[in-house]
Image (cartoon, rainbow, N blue to C red; front, side, top):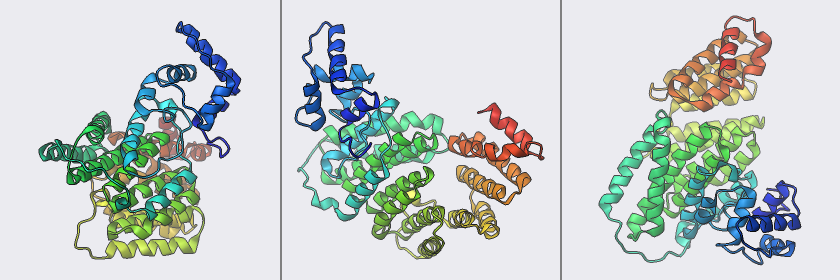
Length: 439
C-alpha cells in the first residue's frame, strides 16, 4: 500500500478509480437492489476512511462487500476493516492480536483476492517490535479452565505428524493442516485454560501456521504465505518461543529474498539474529543472511556471515535443535554457501560446494535436493555449460514432479528463456519440450 493511502477502504476505492462520491453511489445502488434505502454520501465515506466513523456492521458493511465483490464470510470473520483488500499493515504484537492474526491467515484460503503481501517496511517494523518487546511485558488475563491436557496432547501429536508430512504429502495435508489450525484457533479464542496450556496452544498454532506458510510459498501464493508467517510470529511470541520467532522472521526474510528484495531480507535478519539462542537456529539465520548479502554483491559481509553460520553449526549444545530447524546440517551449509559464491562470481568453488551439499543430503529431503540441483543448473548456465545445465535441470524436474514440488518446477521453468537459444544442444530440446508441455 502506498504511504499516502492509509486506510484499506481508500486503497480499494482508488485501486478501482472511484471517487468517494462514486463509491457512495454504488453503495446506494446495492441497497436498492436489496429493497433497502441508504443515505450514504461522499462525506460519510471520508469519515470511514479517516477512522472518524465505522460503517454499520449489519447494514453498511454487507453493502460495501457487495460493491467490491468480497465474500460476506470475510466481513463476519475478520471484522472492520481487516476484511478489505490492501490491509498490508501487520498487526502489532500482543495477546489480543494472536487469535485475530490466525483468523486473518485462515481467511486467505477462502478469499484469495482480498489480500496483498506485506511490504518489506511493514515486516521490518514488526521484526523490530519483536526484537525489543518481551512477551512478559504484555498484560494477560487470568484464565482457568476446561481445555484439558489430554485434548492438548492429542492436538500436539496429530499436529506434529501433519507438519512432518506437509512437504511430501502436500496434496493430502493442505486441508488437514488448515482444519487442525482452525480447531486450535477456536480453543485459543473461546476456551478456558491454564497458563501452561495457553503456552502449548500458541506454540502449536505457530508451528501449524509456519507449515501452512511454506506450502503457500511453494505454490507462489506469497500474500497468503506472509499472512500465515505473520500469524505464526504472533503466536510464537505469546508462547515465549524466542528461537521459533526468530526462525519465522527468517522465513519472511527468505521470502523477500525470493521476491528479489534482498535489502529487506537483511533488515529483518539484523533484528532476528542477535536474539537467536540455539546454535543450530543461529547457523540457519546466518546462512540466510549470507544468501541475501550475496544477492546484494556484498562479498566481505557475505563471507563473514558464512563463517558465522559454520561456527554456530559446529558449536556444542546440551539441548537438541528446535524441530523447525532440526534438519539444518552440513549439507545445507555447503550447498547454500555454493549458491552464495556463485552469486559472487566464484563459480568453480561454488560447484564444489554444491556437489558436496547434494551428496550429503539424506534421501528423505528430496525437495531440498531438487532445489539444490536447480541452483547448480543455473550456475552451469552462467558458465555457458549448457549441456550440463540441461542434464542437471532435467534431474531436478524429474524429482520435483515425482514428489509434487511446484516451487521447484517453477524454478526450472524460469530457466526456459536462457535455455531457448540453445534449443539444438543435446538435452536442451527435450527439456524445453517438457517445459512447454506443462507451461
